Amino acid sequence: MGRLEGEPNRKEWPGGEPNRKKQPEGELIGNGRPGGESIGKDRLDREPTGRVPIERGPTGGEPIGREPTGRGPIAGEVTGRGPTQGEVTGGGPTQGEVTGGGPTEGEQARAGMGSAGRMLASREEYEARAALMRAADVGDPIMGRLVTQYGAPEAVEAIRARRLPPDFIAQESQQKHPPNLTTRLNAWYARLVMANPKADLEAGGRSGARLIIPGSPEWPTQLNQLGPSRPLGLWLHGTADLRFSCLKSVAVVGARAATAYGVHIAAEFGVGLGESGWTVVSGGAFGVDGAAHRGALATDWPTVVVLACGVDVCYPSGHDTLFAAVRDQGVVVSECPPGVHPTRARFLIRNRLIAALSRGTIVVEAALRSGALNTASHALALNRHLGAVPGPITSGMSAGCHKLLRDRKAVCITSPEEMIDLVGVMGDDLVSHTRAPAVPRDKLNEPTKRVLDAVPSRGGAGPASIAVAAGVGLDAALSALGGLAAAGYIERTTSGWRLRKQTTTYPKAPDSAALEPPPTPEPQDPPEDPTLMYDSPPLPVENL
Image 1 (tube, rainbow, N blue to C red):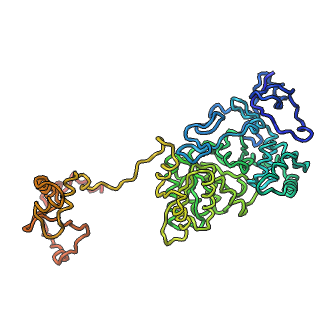
Image 2 (cartoon, helix red, strand yellow; image 1 turned 180 degrees about the vertical axis):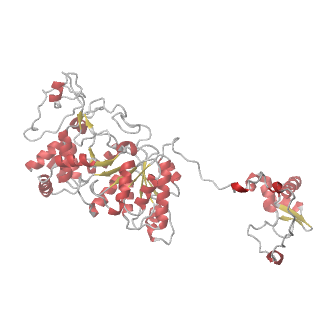
Image 3 (cartoon, one colour; image 1 turned 60 degrees about the horizontal axis):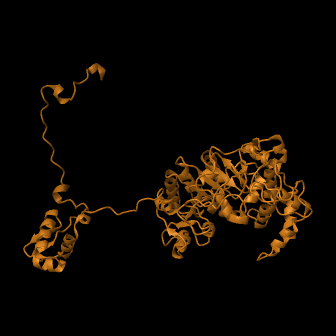
């Protein structure tokens, strides 16, 4: 009988795990660890070769148990082989892909991920995570640790029984600020008994939305760097693939009450990044966010909107047309279940997703207490690149950007090319340095430049004095003076050599003669042959 690989040891629950059959002691499974559990036994009995039949996902769109052979592990992501070129593995940011690693061993086992990378997540896993997304607040680190250690289905059972594992309680008591687990468990239970995950999955499928969880082919692995506050799952609504779109992405954030300058700059960055093949990630709000999304939509590249509400809730309501365009070309993302409305706390915790999905964040406009600075702090905590656009020193909407630059937390960014240069991969995304336009003086050799600098602008000087001032020989000075005079830089007067006065580029005032009307031209007799007045013979009268 076939056997699935990759099943690690699981923490023991009091009285043993329910509905789990233990393997005989000492039997090696997959990775060679003794003990462990047998997963997918009912499937293995039906599939002697060990391959799991493909099932449709609970949302109606994503197949469970499929092998993503068409796409496979995307370049730059962690797939269990160790860090690849350009990945951040715990140090500071590099000029490469920031991913953060793949799913943990426990998650692979619960999802049924074999050595070939097959996704075997069951409907039970999807429903359990959908229920927990209703029970816990977004970004709850306690729930994150519970699910990571014991799995989503087991966490649901523990909350329904209102009894947490003793080892988990002991672990949480060792935290720097131990939480009140009794209060937290009661809050989870009150929400969980009212949750209907099957209805959420069915409603999402009808509206075109889909739920992805850690280990899904579309899951962005860079979110794993969030640790315990990583989302339990993400609801997506759109045509773009989130994982692929975020491989090369930049977060563009800023003030809602942006000035005309900020809106213009955000739109320019959206267009420039999209045309260069970079995905714009933002929050879909008024001001800078909306301008950046519109700029990206003007190109053929996708854009990602991260909401603080359900994907079926349009907030702000004035962006319903914008969100519809994003769903057609990009994707709308939320960790909130369908129907959930935004709150201030959800906006702030949402910002961590914007920073984590992107290689770098650029702040276009931000006041000193702007929410964009919250996104910037998340980017710095995740070792992401951070840029800021300078603005007028008289504008309060740029005070936050100037503070980031003054504190040396952000890099000064003035164009999309500079942002790509900051976050791009060495050798692929580097841009040429910005240079001032060349002038004829740049083509002069060094001795000639010194002679030109020694020529006075008024009066005049002889060749000998110019040679002494320039530090060159008399012959070299005479040769340089002749060439400079021929090029129009200097002129010779009765008192010596001096710089030629540059003609102004401003138009001169007309003299009195120019103000007089031009003389009337004398009439001329027409030619005798009328056909000579035309390049081609005239049309007959009846055709006019």
